[in-house]
Length: 461
Ligand code: FAD
Ligand code: SF4
Ligand code: SF4
Image (tube, rainbow, N blue to C red; front, side, top):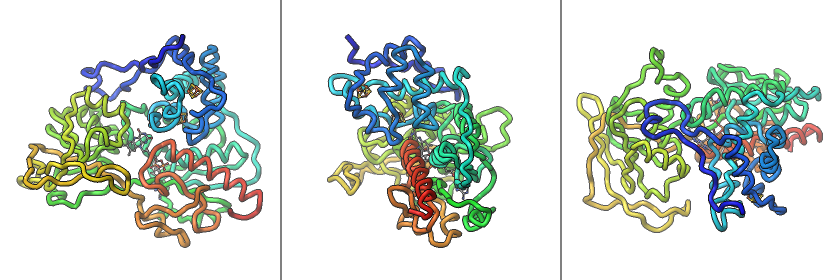
């Protein structure tokens, strides 16, 4: 009889891993993967598939693993996703596919993400053939941004016979997968390999080109592209607007993580300067806050405290990341909100906070944090990292006539990604605001199909 509990994903010792940037989870071996795959009931109504924004045939690929056919598992996976090794590692599975797994009713859901990672890593080991280019259908599309949304859209269009060029502002493709999510959660070699699969399909990735500055969307059309998909993300950090934000030692999580991940500030001799604080506070409760806190620990901080205005239960970060952060010695001051950053000689020396309590649910459905008068307290710190959210950069929308945005600066687009400008589609964080990898990928896939349909019909949708 299959076990109610899933096969745990092996991870490295917390003491050891908190001192380096190597991957935390080591992944299933073949025996573990077969055992976990055997827990899948191969349900006829496939509720798990409905929870996956890119519609992966979950029982199909898991059934192959259970039979010992890892190449077959990879073939099924690669039909629906361009980034399985990424999603197997960073998808919030507990809120997606695994949430609907019937095994979860009387025990733990099947480890779908862990098995996806296993099958994708089998391919990455070089055991399966690289995808082949499809004959050209005579159509060309441009994609702005090489994050998960742009990469997925490009891959789908390439599979439909389009020639696709991705224009990326940074010097490496991957978007947040490359510059945001740290190496210890998502090794960059894995991202590079998944991008190589797309280039094997004929996708042309051009880096160091900022659309809206180096080239405009209008110029892309003049160059002969008949459709443009905008997937420029939401990389502009938000700040708190409290006294002291201009002090030395105050950083956005975006800048901090970019220096560490993209520019490898943790390597000896790295060209990028970075301030290595000894007592660090991180404000926020999402994945970005966890990544910043765990990175600060690995950069040598003696103490790292996450300051979050709601409780541990309400934290939007993935459960696994919170658990790993706790194992690595990160401290949590929940129900606490910063009110001022204290300084000395221009540098941070403390953070003044106030205690919160949870009131009635707000518009997001979560209970609203309410200040408790007279409950102020101070944390002695030398570095403050702010991870309270991001918004899209307005440079692109300002230089693209006809492209409407909403009050949060996000591009307006319908469910298929069609924007207010003909022949221009958009998706991912640029449309939703900061969200998740798999939602960005789902939007890219949907838009690719809409672009292809519109081209067949000879008009935009
Ligand atoms: P992005 O990944 O932001 O990619 C946009 C790309 O467009 C970037 O490469 C950018 O350089 C480029 N670009 C921007 N403007 C231009 C321009 N004008 N011209 C050309 N190129 C441009 N999600 C999860 O599901 N799980 C996680 O564990 C998780 N952890 C996260 C950790 C961090 C630190 C961060 C920041 C985010 C995390 N997320 C996570 C969220 C997730 O990464 C994003 O939702 C996802 O990357 C959005 O994909 P995207 O393709 O829309 O945008
Ligand atoms: Fe689940 Fe994400 Fe994989 Fe879809 S891509 S099956 S949601 S882990
Ligand atoms: Fe397997 Fe769970 Fe999907 Fe059923 S719901 S097919 S048990 S993964």
